[in-house]
View 1 (cartoon, rainbow, N blue to C red):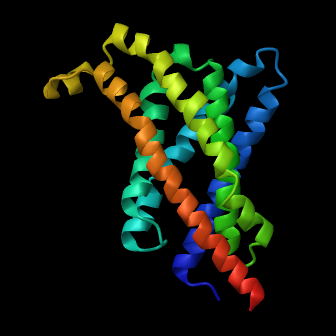
View 2: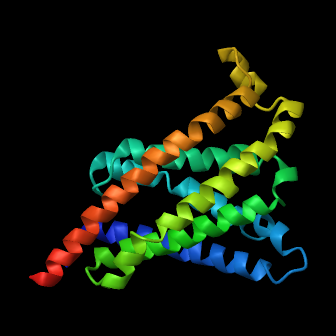
Length: 218
């Protein structure tokens, strides 16, 4: 019988899986429209913003030990995505129709559908080996696609609008910098932070797939 903490994780991961599945379906359906590469935010933006905001709970899961995940890496990933989504894409309407939004949303949705289905089924201890393999392999191509031609390219495209409107000046002026400078610095640091997360995922992949192989042999 599942413990209360396991029931909670099952419910959380199942709801996230459902939400990201709906987002993915919306994105795929939007591709049939005449302006297919420009409608990803209009069709799936609201639900993705909600799912991303709710995923802050995962940093709490890491802190209290509900899951064997590092708090800092979890916070870095959540913070990077949330900043990109809520501070830039949601606030600058001109970038919402860019193809880089479609690329980002498609990569995110595919990876999260895989990840949350794996988590939910693993809680029930009925996760098939092919899904475990897919969970720790799909990131190899989805992660670079989402970050490079997705997040980073869109942030670069947003820079003229950020500079023109002097976004978030009330906050950043307190620190003697502009939000424009902050985003430029973030773009410079992004590849290094991304590489840290990417290499961590490869390390995690080796560990998880080796455990799976040992279980098969026993």
